[in-house]
Image (tube, rainbow, N blue to C red):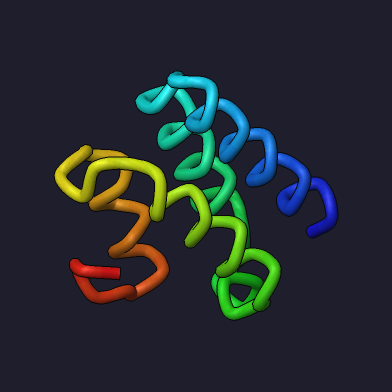
Length: 75
């Protein structure tokens, strides 16, 4: 799980640097690879949430990431 947390941080950095699509896709791939119980980990949810906060809500990877985390559309 520590690797996933680091990868989510890298995704956030990518988005912050303007690589919005790539960062969102990276975050989605990290979440997809995790077993369902780990999705409730606050560090995973926080890292994914940080990425979501920086990308347009309508971006396809963001929509799927939000769905996998079961977050409301406005989150």
